[in-house]
Image (cartoon, rainbow, N blue to C red; front, side):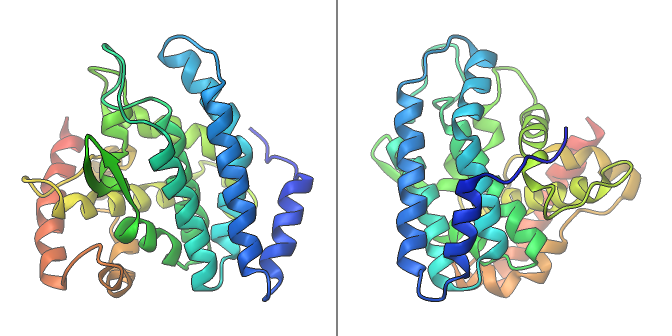
Amino acid sequence: MNAQPETATVAEFKEILADPAGRIEVHDFLSDVTLSTVEALDNTDCEGYDECLRAYEQVSADLNGLLVVGSYFANCADHDKALAHAVRLLANRIPFASPPGGPAINLQHHVTLLAIYAIAFGAAAADRLDPLARIIGTVRAEEDGQLGRVTYLVNCDRLKKPAEAPIQASLRLWMTLRSMTDEFIPRTSEDTLFDAVLDEIEYLLGVTHGRNTAEGTGPVGYGAIQVLATRLAPDRLVRRNLDLLIAHEAFQSPHEFYICRERYNKAYAAQARA
């Protein structure tokens, strides 16, 4: 799939991001597009998992393209807050209940998950993880009257088809977001650069689940299949940004991170063998 051409909306957004006085405009711009996306989701007519998945991806494509751009060019806390607020709107305006026989949560939250990953790809490509750290540590959503981290409530494990491996769900994210990141993550012959970024993002999201689960681990995504070849967990992002993650309360301390990492690495290796 080739890179998508830059739309007028993306070009306008870049201009707003470049203006030091435009921090409020960045917030309003992203909020308006996000709320329009939620409204479009409510009006989407589809049936079945695969048909609805494609419909939701199409409805949210413009928003996700903006989030990749926004997280790559974000250069201040106000930009980070605007990106996090877009995810907060999706997570709290879309209901969580899923119909019988469907995924664990409303499939419309596939859009929320795409938004989180879009921001993660842009942030990782820019080597400035602040927007994603803020989302992991501070964005909450309500499910069944209980507040929880959005990255804990919305993940591949909860959005996959029943009896399907989370790896398949993360592979769909790969296919959906690849063309949106071409401007910032160049394609290689085997696309190993993009794969490596995806592995590091999924590892980071998975290991930060440790504070919220009794077993101390989160979902294991597509990158696990490469562990057998490398024998190394893709933990570069989390190691390089540990202080930032602690500052945003993704972890309480380095000690807590080391415990979560040890438990998650065991799950990661087990999934790789499977």
